[in-house]
Length: 172
Image 1 (tube, one colour):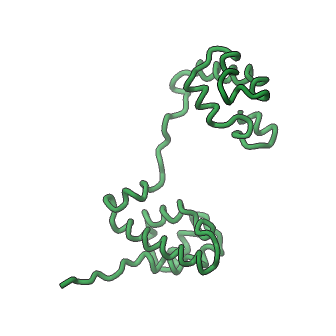
Image 2 (cartoon, rainbow, N blue to C red):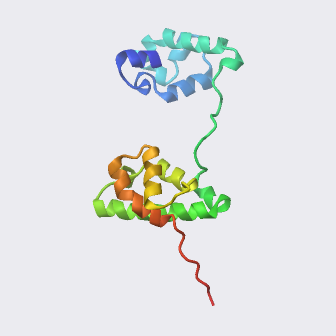
Image 3 (cartoon, rainbow, N blue to C red):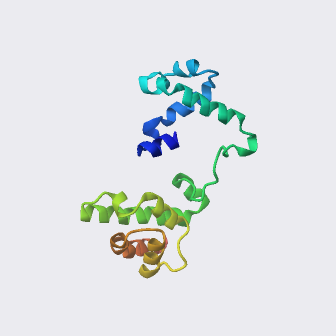
């Protein structure tokens, strides 16, 4: 699929959708004819290519277990935000305050939140903040993570402020 997509200069999913691969892996057809009966493979284009796709399935079946890709790749990002409160309450607070700051900037500049800063980058920054959470330290961390200069200029100082926890007030 990837070679065909590269040759056609299109995304692999346009050549053969991911759901088709999952369907073929689930059904495990034993012939091109059987493969062509599957919903995604029954269209004229994929029916003509059934032999090609069946050949790929056969090559995959012959691979030794050690050459197969892992079932799951280890994640390098933070856990899902819903788990933050239990795992790291300070990080959860940073994320809440940071989201509020970015949302306010988004409204002020009439830009979608994800244009100001990708949600993934914001989560990573909040989960593992840089040692220096001053505006300059946050700006350096954002730049190092690939944020564009205009994004850094807009969100650096507000995020720095959001990284400072509010003072604890005593209740009587």
